[in-house]
Image 1 (cartoon, rainbow, N blue to C red):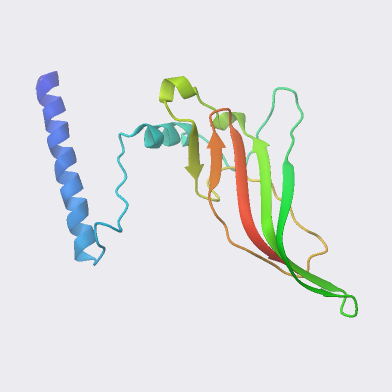
Image 2 (cartoon, rainbow, N blue to C red; image 1 turned 90 degrees about the horizontal axis):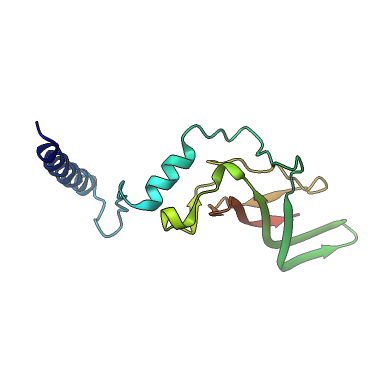
Length: 160
């Protein structure tokens, strides 16, 4: 098999796999307009796969300086209750956390990608807790990473 024949065969197989995927989705009642089809050849997917190769989320990112900095910001959106008698305060807001993970950095010019979004739990995240909180309700969203490895995690929370 020559190189040209092999490339044509791979493209032919790729088309069949895409058709098979659409058939499976349709058989399970998922409409094509709501199904997200991932192109394994787009730069974002290839870059994310390369960055995750060998990545360990249980290992704290190390900086060359030896100093690791995590920035935390609470953006209050609503204070729903303040009771001095019950010694309770309930508020809603966005808990924003920023840090740099050099393992997630890439050459933006080479890839043509400036930011990537990763699902929560896929990369290392700082373990930060409000110790005096009685109850915390949060919705885990994705993380945004820029080409220098700067990570932004923004989580809506209700804190009591």
